[in-house]
Amino acid sequence: MKRAIWPLQRRVMLAFSMFALLLAALYGLYALVFMYAVEDSFFAATLEQEAVAQQRSQAQSGQWATPRDDFVRVYTRPEDFPPDLLEGHREEPWRNEFAGQQGRHYHLLEMRAPDGDRAWLAAEVSRKLVVRPMRDQVLLLLAITSGVMLLLALGTGYWLAAKTTRPLSRLVARVEGMSPERLPLGFAREFGDDEAGVLARGLEALAQRVHAFTLREREFTRDASHELRTPLAVIRGSAERLAAEPGMSSAALEQVAHLRQSAWQLEQTIISLLSLARESEVPDAPACVPLLPVLERVVVEQSLLLEGKQVDVDVDVPRSAVIEVPATVAHILLSNLVGNAFTHTQAGEVHIGLHGDRLRIANRGEVSDSPVDATGTVNARPGSSGLALGLSIVRRLCARYGLQVDTRQAAGTFTVELSLVRSADQGGPATASR
Image (cartoon, rainbow, N blue to C red; front, side, top):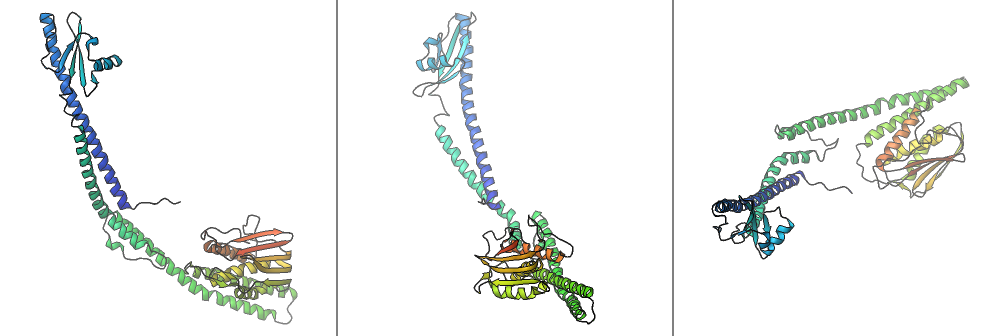
């Protein structure tokens, strides 16, 4: 399943929003850390000042004095600590800050007298705390600020994305419906000198080249249709008149027959190529044509290939059969496949019939070398280049219109099957064709 891709404008907005949200969260974290650090530094400085006064008193009178602040106490033994402070101190004696029970919070500082005695200053600061009582309000303020920043980022991202992607969206609208028959020309002047303008000028130059190439191809197709078929018709007519001349030797008549057959094959190849070139301009919309009339016309046209051969042709196709391609394409496919069967059958029978939704063409009898190998690759032998090219055209048409062509050989019978119904994967490659 193909993953859906968000438009560029939405992705820019999302990037701005995520950046703003991350920035607000980061600065909010910094603000909380700073507030806690300032508060803890205040209590630590208070204990440090008290410790200096206590050590001075100890040096003068040999006793610890009463602390100046009522929330500070002096303890000469850890056992005298409040129970919640004592429990925390025993578990982690290196710490100087402890959370007590029922909301109490302690800061602890160890002192040493000149004679080596130890004492501890403990400050229960729960009534002096500033940050913790207002922590919920601070978090709410940070959340509101983050929301405002997010809305501002969305608005800024939308404005910037719209401004940035507007030329690209116009360019996409221009080239979205491009085809060789409908090429937008002269649109690059609507864009500036930014990246979209550079892309527009490049696409316009490419469109102009494609347009010129398409015109040249159409002109060549039109000219070749006349310039090539007319001389070939003259060659075939001259060969037929020459074959009717009295006194021709058998060797000369055989050469004239080869000339007629080669001219006919070349004419069929040219017709197929020109038809395929013109067919590229026809939409790939589904089309159904009756199969039997096209097949009967093809058999008559290809019957020249059976001259001098003992070959029977059996056509068993109902009139209701249809093939899901345009009539021109059906004629090209059948001409190449039927002509191939006639060419490679020296004696016996060519049977053409239906097998389900597939047209089956079977060579029964004396069959010459197959034009395809075991892998379905065309065997281009001397004198058969026209047929090889015709089979290449069959494969191209089958791949384009979603048809399949299968070949198999068994018990002296070579069989070709052409599907008459398009497969679900219309653009997939066809199987090996004969």
